[in-house]
Image 1 (cartoon, rainbow, N blue to C red):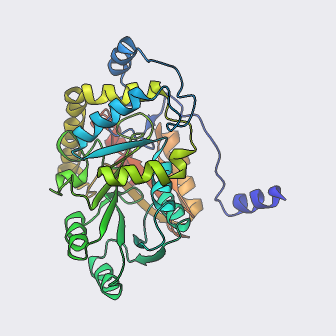
Image 2: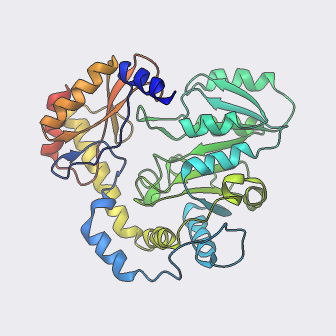
Length: 360
C-alpha cells in the first residue's frame, strides 16, 4: 500500500529524503540567518553558563512541577518583544495549530493564499468559516471583509514569505484590521531575529502597536535564534485562552528546560546577537549594490519551473561546494519549482559571488 505512494512521488521527481549536510560544503539552504548555530564562541559561552534546573520538562506545562524557568522566560520574552504576555509552544507549527484549532466557531478567518503549510493545516482544523484572499492583496481582502459585517474576524499573514523572500504589506494589513475591528495574526518565523530593533520582527520595524490587544504575533525560535519553539506574543486574555483551549499546548510535554535556558541566554546576549544581525544587513546591502540582489529579505529564489531542472541545478551546485534548497510541489505550486538560497551573516562575499555566478 505505502510503496505505491512512494513510487508515485519518485516518478514525479517529488521524492524527499533525510540528508546530513556535508561540513565541507557552504550552507545556503538552512534558515540559520545569523549563523548562531555554527558560532563556536556562542556555543562555548552558553555551555559554560548552562545550569538547568532539570534536564526534561517531564510533563505538560499544566501539571504543576518543573516549569518555573518557562514562566520566567515567557515574562522576559514578553518584555523584549513588547507584548503584554507570551506563551512558548514546542514549535512554530504547534503554536499555529494550537491557536487556530482552538478558535471559537463564531470567528471568521481570512488567510493569505500563500501562507505556510502550518497555517493552512491549522486553519483547516478550525471550526470557523474560512476565506482565502489573493496573495498580499489589500484590495481583495478589503472586498471580502466588507461582505462579512457580523462576528469576530482574524486576518492571517506571514511577515516574510519564506518561499519567495517577500515582505508582506504589514502596515496596510494592520490598518485594515483596525478599520474592520479584526484581529491580525502575524507569523514572524522568518523575520524574528532579522528585522526590527534587535531582531524584534517586521511588526516592530513597521511601527505597529505591539501590545495592542488585536495584534497576535508568532515568533519562531528555530531559525535566526538557532533554538527551538514557537512563541505567541499577545494580550494576557489571549494567552489565558490558549492555556485553557489550545490542545497542542495542553497535551504536549513542555519544551525542554535546556532549550528554555538557551532562549533566555539569547535575550541576555542580545547585544552580541544584534551585531550579527547588523552584519547580515551590511552584507545584503553590498549584494544589492554589486549584484542587484532584489530580495526584501535574506531569502533568494531562482524559478526553474520543472522539478527535474531544479534538482539538476541543486546537484550541480553541490559539485561547486554549495548547498541550496529545492522547493517543489506541494510546498510551491505544480511546475513552479525553485532553487531557494539563504544569505547568512557568516557567509563570505566570495562564497556568495560563487553562488550568484553559477545561478545567474
